[in-house]
Amino acid sequence: MANFWKSINKPILALAPMAGITDRAFRQMCKGFGADVVYSEMASATALVYNPLKTLEMLASDKNEQPYVVQLFGSNPDHFAQAVKLLTDKKKIQKLKATSYQLPAGIDINFGCPVKKVAKQGAGAVLMDKPELAREIIKAVFDNTDLPVSIKIRSKVGGTDALSLLDYLTDLPIAAVMIHGRTLAQGHSGPVDHQLIKEARNHFGGVILANGGVNDRETALQLLQKTGADGIGIGQGALGRPWVFQNVKCQMSNVKGRAEIFKITLQHARLSNQLKGQTGIIEMRKHLCWYVTGLPDASALRRQLVTVSSLKEIERIFDIAG
Image (spheres, rainbow, N blue to C red):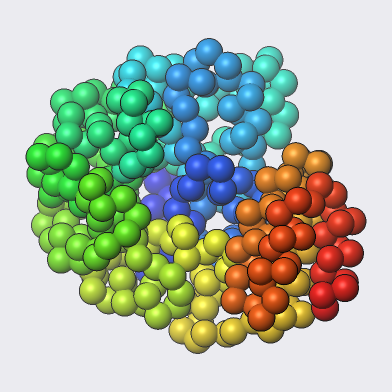
């Protein structure tokens, strides 16, 4: 299958993968505002082996999300092999009746997640400090798919930094790497190592996406400028602000007024309701709170929005508040 990373225009603006957040509705919102690439929520390779239908439903996508990249985590190379086989096997998917699942444009492997629950499984960022196992996992994926394969890593984990890991993997045809410019010890706070991401160009020949510290248009443009990367992955900076991609592309702040924020929020809520029903509305609660951040009556709105269980409730709250 064609490597979309080679043909996509630069700078690439990607919606970075976030567990429990980058679902189908949010990906479509970000895509509508100009995201070039969108990643799935982090999916367990092991779950795809033992309970595939539930995970395939989580990974369901629509054509308007392409190029869409499925991100996997885990620590067992054999599970990764079986998972990627399934993800590209139309006959197996049909047998499982995962009707909403569409083949992705690429597969990404997570070596950057700092969450303790993931680390306890020997997965996520801790794998960076086990380069031999990381390499085995990447090879297992390559051996079982013709989709372009990418990885997400951190600046440093334990005794292994991003540059030494990329050197160790240099003979593998990895299409793209997203580098979170913070160490595992830093988590999601503290300074981003722009220089390390910039130096990665001397250690990796594929597409480099910089990640970390983006809160708005200004910080996104700074990350691009300071790292010289081919693009950036925007995660937390898109929460409640999916139009950040549009702002970066237009190089203007394009501040949204109250009425427009409510309109966009309702569009997201209706989409989530359409795709997941009441479950989608309950999962929307966090998004609703992010959308109203910064409004004068944000605290009062959050108190109401955090308990909603239907689309009508959301519409009523915004109608009164509007």
